[in-house]
Amino acid sequence: MKIEEIQPQLYQTFQKLVKNDHLSHAYVFVGGFGNYDLAVWLAKAVFCQEIVEGVPCGRCRICRLIDANEFSELQIIEPDGQTIKVEQIRELLASFASTGFESTKKVVIIKDAEKMGQNAANALLKTIEEPDSEVYIFLLTENENLLLPTIQSRTQKVIFPKNTQYLSEFLQKKGLLKTDADLLAAITDSTDKAQYLAESSWYLPASKALANFVQTAITSAEIAFLKVIELLPHFEGKAEQEVAFDVLLVLFNQLGATNLTEKTFKAEKMWRANVRFGSCLESICL
Ligand SMILES: [Zn+2]
Image (cartoon, rainbow, N blue to C red; front, side, top):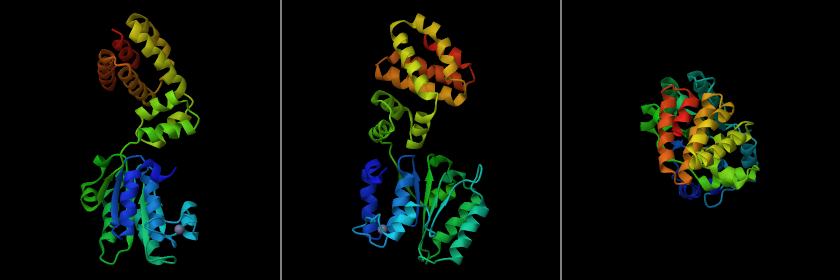
């Protein structure tokens, strides 16, 4: 997928920054819509041998190495288990100190940056803040509130807005019917999550069952009440049940069923307070 399609405005903004040599050294990219893609695109922009007007060529040796994830001056860090450990950052910095084979510039992309602890963050930020540093870092997160204050105060924040239309088209290209794609695009906040659900064996049959339930609830609450039991096998785990409420809210809302939308909100609150899933669904029909 191309970053210019997912985030056309951010793409233009960053193209200008690159062209005018105004790219900052430390960014936080917030949101699951193309933040990784833009970070990789910017890595190409930093290193590309044939960059034109702030746009990396995508064809030179370095652009191709980056696409293959084999370019040594670009490092991508992911959590090792539940956290990004200070050892990971130390190793990274040590590798920077010892190489410099391709370029004195370095780019680091940190996935799930909210999982970086204080020591790891300080080690990393200290390097960037050295006056002759040519390190660029892109911290990716879907939840900026979980980032350490020390990171928030020392980086530039860029919000990646949700692009529902793009997401729906993305899902249709993966083979989903438009109705299914629109619904899934409405309930998810990232292409990763949407694709994960689309490819899971349970989601599509489960969402169809919910669509039937919604149609029934609109015509007869009593019959819908009796049908709750048929829904339960589709939603055995907490993660699936959470998706169920998201789907119900979107569907009731689309049909303008204000009363049922409000009841679903209440049902979800009950569920979060540990009331049984089935009882919460039944409460929508009362
Ligand atoms: Zn290139």
